[in-house]
Image 1 (cartoon, rainbow, N blue to C red):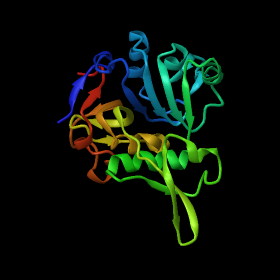
Image 2: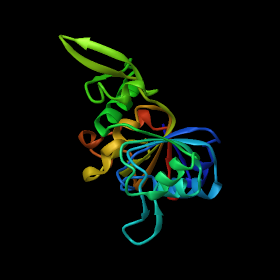
Image 3: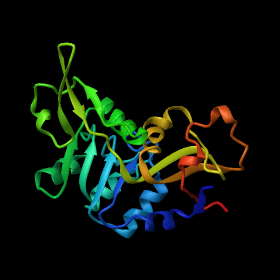
Length: 227
């Protein structure tokens, strides 16, 4: 059974040097309340695994949307992502050497996380073969199958996953509205500790069984101000 904590309590669980997966796409679907509390704490030397670096400004004009808060605060020492072009601070910190940035194609990143969650040894993909990607830390080797070469990409896991659901019941079952599930769904399988932030906390049973996308068996904590 998932334990209910406040966003502040959830953020305090994350120690310096931890690796965190954060679901979402350009900040949409980020666990915004937990991230805001983590930014206040100033926890340093974090490895962030996320689709992107979010944006300097949010849809309502707020500064540093989603994980951009952590990047702006220079709390991230390593970023593993697919797209960072909308946050210029990523390039600035990468160029001044304060943040190590690894860019992985979105499909490959999703599959590497899925492999980490499923306990698989890696992912075979032709993407990147014959390029400098072959020398990257996340590539185990080149494998030839039926005359075609593939990169064997290593699985990815993290210490924590911060996911966000539109509805989360008190047992930790999660329903994602529309495209909110994006990376949230797969990241919930690939971390030692999973923290789910709900838009709405509902009673157990209020989410139809067929609508549950992330089962409560995967969720350790629900981060909410609701009692």
